[in-house]
Every structure is written in structure tokens, then in C-alpha cells.
Length: 582
Image (cartoon, rainbow, N blue to C red; front, side):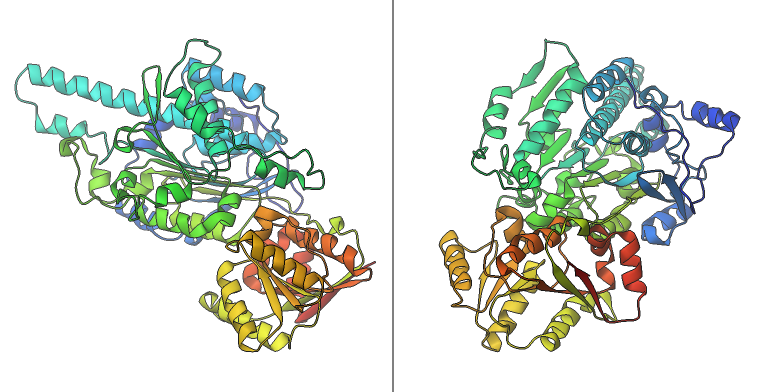
């Protein structure tokens, strides 16, 4: 069963992207019946198109599409002239040249899943199958079935193309010398074999991807040929923690603890006819399935310098970016520095390498997909800078109502806005404002810091003025964490400094808080209200909350305060605003 199309909807105040004419709609559907792979891979890239795609996507023409109940999709124009994205038009796998078997297996797979928002699935499906770069904000994991099937379709067409071209060359060779123009017309490969990179935060996510890949390839067929399947089961399952006595843990944290949470792995996957080969050497693999940490270790790292393996990628997928943000986003940054870099040496037949790789145009023939549970400024920055597909870019803006309604205790929130003249000085200006805001921290002060980099700077500052404080951060050993919590609770230390990453992986209840200071609003939206609810119960009175924010925190603010309230907060001329709840 293919994804059903979304009915035409219109959001008040937003221009509807699709036409209301049924005849034009049918015409659009007919035109889409083509081989998506061929239209993507054979695009004639000229100099004006290259110049357009080489700059940040923020400089391109933007078209807004609205879907009722789901928000907006911003379409950043690619190099083609046609309008590509319209989430209100019905498209099926067959309309993109998928084989009947692949479409059937995909239909059976998604039919067994529960996708909470059908228009969301339709929009994601269309953007992916049209080879557009995509940033999607979704709480569902069923998008994995879509990108897995799309990746499989791409591999099928890519491999068939190579086989057919090889047959043509062999046929020409039997007739004598191979014409030069024939050799040029049959260039079909990159510098190396891997053409897809799938980044997942944990082994349990990689395991889920492989299970979906098996269902896409084999469907309900009981006869499957998977190499090293026993080793895969042994290494990528298990490790789950017993949560029977953890009834008070938030549901998202329980999900985090379930399954194999190993965050350092690399897996090469090759597909040959009906055989799925796991644990293949990377240079013989079609798909590289890695965690950010696992991949970084072989890119100018302690375990090798294998940057060339990323030189010919045609698809890059970042799955659960919100989790990777809590691990170490620097890994992602360094990985993207290596993607599509020119290799210093190659072992392939240079006559088969496509000119687009030789000329440095690989980023324009590569698709970038990023999926996250919530918005973040770093995700937007990555997509606007690195999304270079000639098909264009689609960015999702969900409807954000915030979660202040989850605060169930009386509190006074003081919102302190400070100015940042340049984005590069944001960290300095935040520290400067914090210095002027507070004197020696009084007893019962808890300081929440989102970034470990900021944590180090604030810790050094507090030490320099002899504040009485302890800290809980992600690198602290368990015995020091227990000691810090105890000293703070019993008043032997005035202040407790906590990093977001520590809370993300531990979710400890910290007692003794009388004043809560958010050095920056959390990147995880639930943490703001979670901290307030958890600690104010201990205070037994209305707790005071101080939040420092600036213009660059707009996306984070929307996730917590909602889009409308955030707009009002930023529109106010007041530098300090207050929200009081009883």
C-alpha cells in the first residue's frame, strides 16, 4: 500500500502552494511518472546552476507550503525550473520508477506501522523520492521505512546501470577497439564503492534500520540470504537495562535506556542480487552504517585515515539528530568536512569515474536527509550550508505550541534578553551578561548550562571569584556526582552547576534548589519544564527562575514557549520580562 495523498488544505494567512484545478493536478501526477533516479543522476549542471547551488541555501528563492495541523514546509529552490515539491499532490512509489516488488514490500511494511500524521508521511515521502534535501521534525520513527526503501531503489538503479554499461563495453571490445566517445558516455561510478552513509546514534537504531532493509529486500519471503546474521544479532542486540523499578522515569528516557545503547560502531553493508552482506570491508560496501563517534575514529583518527571512503556519497542520512546533539555534535561537523573531499589516491578505473566527481560537483548530485524530534539552530545551520542537491531543499517548520502548560507548580520566570552584535561573539556576550547579572550565588542556586564549552567557562569564572559551588557534568565519575549532590542538598555548598548532557543521560532528581538559573534555554524542550517541576516541589514555595536568552535562541524558545508567545517575547522592547504562574 503506497502512502495516501494528503487532501488539499489551507492554513489561514498562508498562500496555498498547489492549484485548485483538478485538471492541472492530474497533469502534475502524470508528469511525475518517471524514473526518479535517472532525472536526478543525469541533470545537466551548467555554470549558473553550479553558482546557485554553491552558495548557502538561505540566499535562494523560498516557497512556503502549508499543511493544516502539521505546519509549513519551506522549499528552497534548486537548479531546475520546474516546481518540485507539492505535499498536496498524490504520488506513489510506482510514479518514481520503483519496481513492483519493491513497491509491494514497502507498502506491506508501512501498512504494519502506525504513523501518527499521514500528511507528514506524504510530505516526507515526496521530498525524499524527488531527491530533495530534507530536514524533517517528527516524533515518529516510521520515516526510516521511507528512506530505507528509497535508498534500496537508488541502489537497484545504480547497480543495474553499471552492469548494463559494462555489458556495452564488453560487446564493443569483442568488435575491436572501444570508441572514445562510447567510453565517455558510459562513465557511471565514483572514486570508491560506498554511495550511502547512514548515521545513527546507537546500535539499536542501526539494528532497526537493518531489519527494515531486510523487509524491503525480501518482503514476506522466508528464504533470505544474510551474511554474518548471527554475528550481527550478537553485537547489535542486548544491553537493555532493567526498568521495572524505574516507574518515575519520563517515557522518552525509558526509550533511551531500552536496547543496545553502544554509541561507537561501524558496519559495512553490501547488496548483491538477493544477498545482504553485513560486516563487509568498507571499500567493498554500498552502505556505511555508523555512529558519529565510530565513523570519526577512522577519519584522521586513532584507527585510520579513511576519508576517501566518503568521497563518492550520493546519499547521506542523519537519523535522530537530536540524540547526536547530546552525544557530541562536533563529530558531525568533522564528518561533513570529509564528505565529497577529493581522495589523494584511488584504485578504481578512472575511465569509469563520472566527470562530476573529477570536477568537484559531487555535492550537487548527493541527497542529504536529517530527522530530529525537535528543532535546533545547529540543524538549520548544517542544512543551509551543506544541502547542495540540484533538486533543492525542503525544511520543515512544525506548529509549536510549547510546553509551559506542563508546569504544575507556582513559579516566577524572569526572562533576561541580552544583545549580541555578531553571532561569533554569542558565547562571550552571554558570559559577560551573566557576570553583571549575579553576585556571589546564594544558597540553593542551581545553574543549568546547555553547552559543555560554556560550562567550562562559567566554572572557571565561578572559581575566580571564589563562589561556593559543586558541579554535575557528563565527564564526572559517579562518586563525585553523589558527593556533589549531597553537599548541595545539605547546604555545604551554595550552588550546583548542571550540564544538559548530564541530565539527558541521567535524569536525576536534584534536591535543595531555591533558585533556578538557565544560562541558556535547553536544546531539549522538555528539560525546561522538567527542571522546574522536579525541583520546586522541594522549595515548598514559589520558586524563582532566571532565563538568559538572545536572538539566536529563537528556535529553542519556540519549542518551550510556543511560536506565538515567543513572537511576543521578542517583539517586546523590554530587556527583562516576567511570567508568573500560580
